[in-house]
Length: 215
Length: 111
Image (cartoon, rainbow over all chains, first blue to last red; front, side, top):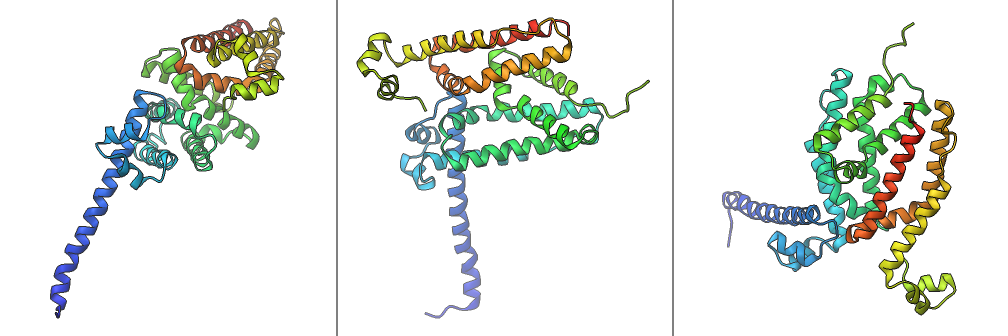
């Protein structure tokens, strides 16, 4: 049977469309499985089973393992998903604002990221200690926080020498760690706003001034 | 990684049965280990230089806290991982944090 170019050009988009449609559905399924996993973690701090994840996502256990080789691969994918979400939901804002505006903006952004991410973070610390892939992602997440400090507090950091600047960045990263946020919210029972205020005041005290001292 | 009863017995040079003659179960042993650690931390971290100048007090507090953290970090991590399933262990982590706070209140009273 001969097929004209016109026939081909008419058929190809449909075929491509089917393939793209399948790929899109598969990606959507993957995303729903990841959302199910993250949702379960937010409700309970322990690692959910494949059966629980499948049930929450509305798929079979087999569907889960068709998309993720094992539960560690799912954890790694969940971290990548959350890192991408954090980057999308938390772009730097008020970079050129005054000191108080920048501190408040950075703290609120970081607090939002911690509020969304602390459940996954804890499971990674308790179950992913031996995974090189997860260790790499923890390092990336921490480096991103430091990169953000460098953007937001450039005027203050530029007044410091290399060693002092590095020490301050390490202190700021430790201060605004996921576990630090969890402690403010759960152990000290602070509201989101109160916990932000604790960070705002602490960062304001840690950052140097940008004006030469008077007198 | 939490050690098994067999590993503990081997390290302690006793039988597994000896462990369970002294502790009702692994959770009982974890709680006892936490209590033991708290006593040790309290002994290690007695406040010093509380009447010194600002720099001396900061240095003294940081040195004390750093030594305790360096020594007890593995146990602390285990405690953090286990506390969600145990009211007793949760109470111990709370007691440790309260102790850290009260030590800071003592050291930085003037500020």
